[in-house]
Image 1 (cartoon, rainbow, N blue to C red):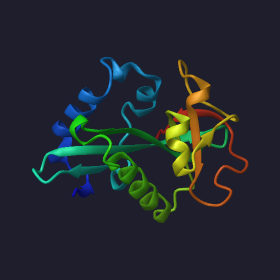
Image 2 (spheres, helix red, strand yellow; image 1 turned 45 degrees about the vertical axis):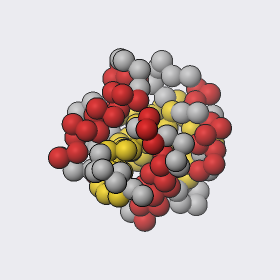
Image 3 (spheres, helix red, strand yellow; image 1 turned 90 degrees about the vertical axis):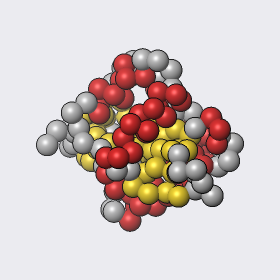
Length: 164
């Protein structure tokens, strides 16, 4: 059983440790981190799952971005990670599903991510052929999901950092 809650300041060091454990060294050099620099997370969508021992078993974060010349707002999903001792238990899928439901309820229309298409297809993500992610990113791994009907209608182009 997992307790899922919104990530708090007190979770920060444990979540960062989980991301360090789950991803290769140098993860912060990825182009997705350039879109996240100096940008506040979408707090309502950043979730933490704690196990029966109250340890962080999984976490997911979202960031605001904009798309194209019209600066259409979108969510950038990621990172999402599950502690190795809890992999294969469906926790990653649970975090993704719950956070996408919250995003939809909050009125977000669209989500993008860079990831494994076969894994994310079960949540409705498809390859984004009309979007351009900052390099170096394999365009085959750029995926999108419409949270609201026609969420990506008339939305295309380069993905940019969200600026206040």
